[in-house]
Length: 218
Length: 218
Image 1 (cartoon, one colour):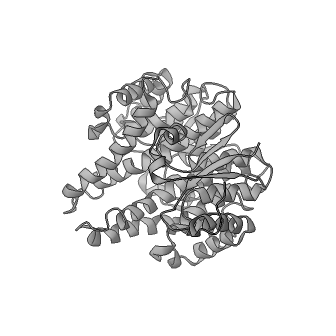
Image 2 (cartoon, chains in turn yellow, cyan):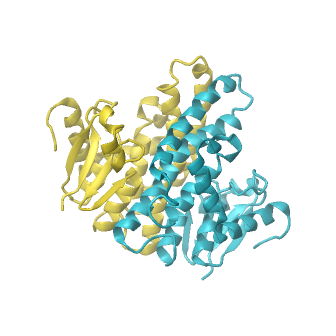
Image 3 (tube, chains in turn cyan, blue):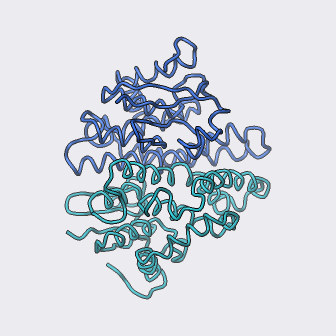
């Protein structure tokens, strides 16, 4: 049964691929699973019908038969577990390590990046933001320094490309506008390798098409 | 083979159970898996030997035979997947939903709580913190409001207790000192139900013993 995901009717980033449905689209493209998209307005996201699917009123959600999931990480892991393909290795230990990198991306690397996004957007007009921003940026740099040291000159975080890399590249992409990513040559190249994957390209184009009005997927 | 986890030699919270090894201890206790603990000093956490296990220089780690994992979420999921018991239901859809709540805990509910911890501790002496703190607290309240609405008068987030509840209770425990948790009666009761579980009690006592010098587990 073809799964249906939800995405922003109009993404706040205007189609730059930073909305979290891109991560799910990318995972679906990596395993060759076709999918439907239902677009949701900001207003509809806070209504009971959508809150029944996603208690925090966000996108994406994932519906397939009588299963409904929310949370990007859980959806990507579900897709990875239920399809053979590049997202999870067959070896049990390598598989557990790939899942570790998924959690590292969203629970260790992303939180300071979310703080930076909050400081730059939600608190942009606050009197403290100019003085506070360097501290927040340094906390992001601390994490990237450690990630950069671990990656070294490898192509991916642990052997072949996996769902861990999908999630880490997606998280790091949020930093591009800040310029911080460019301070770490190997991480910039790592992100570029992720973006160059045909599955990412298809996912990116699909979400961009929604936001530039080139097509109306559903 | 008995797994070995790492924990703080001296936890910053002095044994209140907020260090992340408590979450892993709790999971191990729920499935009845004995474990060894290796204590690590703040200094040793930043040295190459520990960084080889945990690239971000934190605890906990998990070693079992030739497998090394880091990231609390990944470790708890690994334990849940490899043992029958209360952490993951047998039904595939219920299992996917329990994993969804694990991700919701650490990627949707915990980030604003981490921001609050950062504001109250790392930025405690900054001139902006007094004016900024109410904003940060309101962002936490927004998430708790949504979580509280979903939980309603149920005991657990989705049917029986699962690893999703283990993680959500652990995340919410970080809020107790702020007083915010007390604003949501059903969430306070939910956290208390988690703390009342015998497995949590054993995990809590084990980490407290380390930090009060009552024993030296290894």
